[in-house]
Image (cartoon, rainbow, N blue to C red; front, side, top):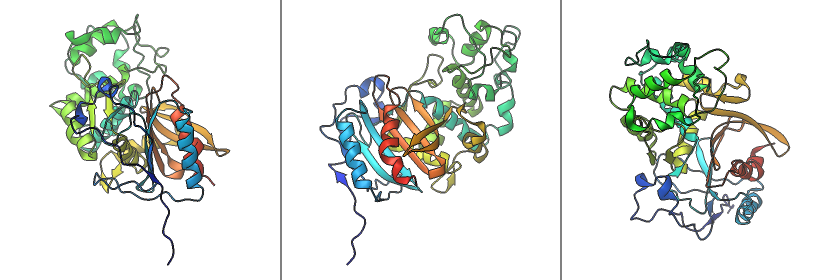
Length: 371
């Protein structure tokens, strides 16, 4: 009899204590989770009937790569790494948790929240709330409550695509001015105030500037288009469709936080990343607009930040690989590698050191697939 694929598994799949509600695992609550006593990893992940097909990672060199990854992590090379997951060709093939990592515990995503705002837009386009053509329309054209007589010159030129490229041009005397408005200005009143207090919008000011305000413009428009609340839309049409376990805080004006503020399980992020690399399809259903996802994945844009995704090139195994990713402070990744048909997710609670979890993936896992 021949031998089947050899799989590596260590320990029991770590879960939240039953007394804790995953949907209440906010950023502050996650800090209370005790570190796992040892690393869990598996090259043949369990089928949890959660919509993720599973497979086996058994390429030549796998055993050595995983042992080296676990050893480096134990030695602190990647700081406070919490999880790494790897998907390829339709299947989850590697799953690892350490420290605060739990299969059913949402982990803060930081700026992947911006990326998830873009994903929410992709779903809104797919269900007909918006059209691709709307990306080049002024954001104020979607906001009927805005008093145009009071807004600064040039605000009317800000399009949705500008906001998706972080090029709205909104500029304020104080860096944190948008956060100072609190609950005094709900929903469109919040943006009315921003449009009144910004410096005039000019071609010079409409340059790239990374902020949480631009994705908030997108979220507000979706909220208006739902004729309900965008929170309900996310729950039903985004998280609900992906079977995601998550919690997502609101900002003072009443819409979800968009710069940072969401928490998703690593498996949930992997599902969304899988849909991105598959043209918006997940388990055979077109969940995200194919036209919109094509824009996200278009490599002709070169390197940079587009549609709230980072487009970057890195070296692994002596070769360049291109990846399109949501990236969050502290080491959060929802990365697609189009040439390899791979999605990698990493979570961590690092102090800065944002690149370390990506380094772990590039040093140990991606080389298995690079010829």
